[in-house]
Amino acid sequence: MTVASESLAASVATISPAMLALAGGVLAALILLGIVLFLRAAGLRREQAEEADLRARESAMRMAELLKIQAEMQGRITAMAEVFGARQSELNQTISQRLDGMSQRVNSTITEQTKSTHENLQRLQERLAVIDAAQNNIQTLAKDVVGLQAILSNKQTRGAFGQSRMETIVADGLPMGAYAFQQTLSNGSRPDCTIRMPNGAPPLVIDAKFPLEAWNAIRDAGSPEAGKIAGQQFRRDMEIHIRDISEKYLIQGETQDTAFLFVPSESIFAEIHENFEPVVQKAHRARIVIVSPSLLMLSIQVIQAVLKDQRMRAQAHLIQGEVAILMDDLGRLDERVRKLQGHFAMAQKDIDMVVTSADKLTRRGAKIEALEFDAGGDSKPGRDTEPAAKSVESRTGLLKLRVVDEE
Image 1 (tube, rainbow, N blue to C red):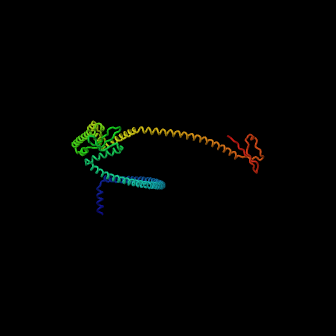
Image 2: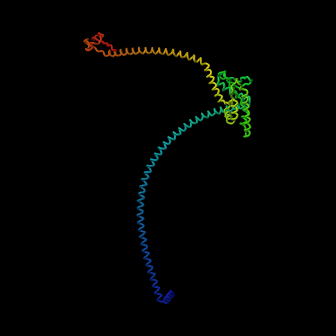
Image 3: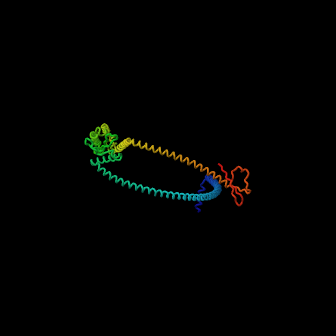
């Protein structure tokens, strides 16, 4: 310790006074700086404290405002909760009512739909029954078509089919005796049908043969070339058939100068007039009329009207005689009606007289109902000019009954 002190004192002794003064100035400056720093730190702490105090007061005020706002919010939330509760109750009630209404409507709709579905199913069953019946008819028709195809496959049978259809149309439209089938002409030919015309005119010839093989070849042609060849064959067959009818059945003075070629199908008739116009023109030039079932029926109806008119003209004198007799009977009827009218007039006059007498009796009965009793037996003044009245005695006095005739 002594050595250290001695060394320190030695080192201080070695320092110059200027350096000691400088060191003292520095030390004073440091102390002053520390004091300034301390004062600034104290001021800063004071400012921070004041600022903290201000912030605390502001926080307290904000907290109070927040508490106030929270209280208001709680009140509003309570009020809104009450309103929402009331609205929710009303909404629940409205929804319940609407659900009930919708349930009723849904139930009624389901009931109506069930009823409608039942009716539709019933109608569907009825339609299915009709469809089943139609299917059975179609199956029967298919069998008939197969049978018809078998018939048409044979030439003789096919000709008989066309002839039978023509005979049915003629027999349905004309009376017995106005037509004949397979009648032999003077040249030995036998047309399918001859129809007797009125006023002694020659009969009309109808032929029911038709080249169906060539027509089926046109239908069965698989190419335009085959169709063209089949069409040419059909045209040749038709021309040959038209020539045969013209040569065999058109006899001057024995038959009409026009004959019918019957085609037993409306579709074939239409195809001929649409695609085979030269054949139709050649038939017209040969005075051959190609007719379908409908045209033949129309022609038969026209012939029937002509025959009916001819029969009426033949019976015209009988009709005139019957009309004369009818006029005589009508004259007698008019005379008797007039006599009956006179009797009715006389009866009406008698009835009027009876009604007049009934009116008189009614008036007199009314006067009898208005009878008056006179105790003194004298009549009232002013009645001297009336006719004498009948008197009836009674126990109570004299009852005078006056009856006055009034026209």
